[in-house]
Length: 229
Image 1 (cartoon, rainbow, N blue to C red):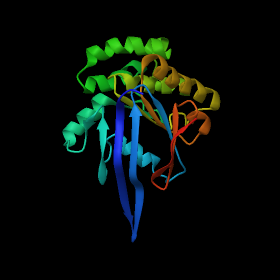
Image 2: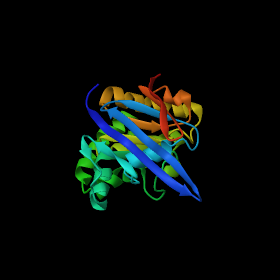
Image 3: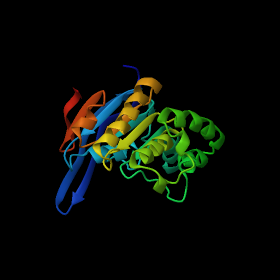
């Protein structure tokens, strides 16, 4: 497998709940190669969502380190973390998180505008729309789209700045089984044909089986590390 797109080394995150210290993450080590699809599974409270927040630079670890394409994020200030998150990470959410007043094209291009890369984004949008089968949906607003179409729009938005890693948090959680399968096939095809790197949190074993690896969490630790599907 080629070099890592994202890596966590000895990552820990603790919370104080009254007199009790909750170890949300307890010394987690994880490496995801470029062009790899990894699924993270575990019961509620196992630490998988905390891991996604730390990998996504949305929260800071108490100890340990996150590397993105070999770059340490440990000593970066808030502005540098924001820039790295914007340029190197793409996010897909369970609830799509599309802006209702904007059409699909405008939603997709938003991260490119924020990064001052609108022209490059518009060129990339043509390619992504073709890959994702949404070319004829770009002028539609979210309320005019099906759940599967909205998630494809969200995937395109996550990819518009050509990120190193796509972080998908329960991306099929609000979809029926047929539509879920369609979305998962899009992610699988993206990894296989277009070299996307995907880290997906899911509670659904059927969804996880689309990944190259399933990593199981319990009590803030990986307990069946790098389990092959």
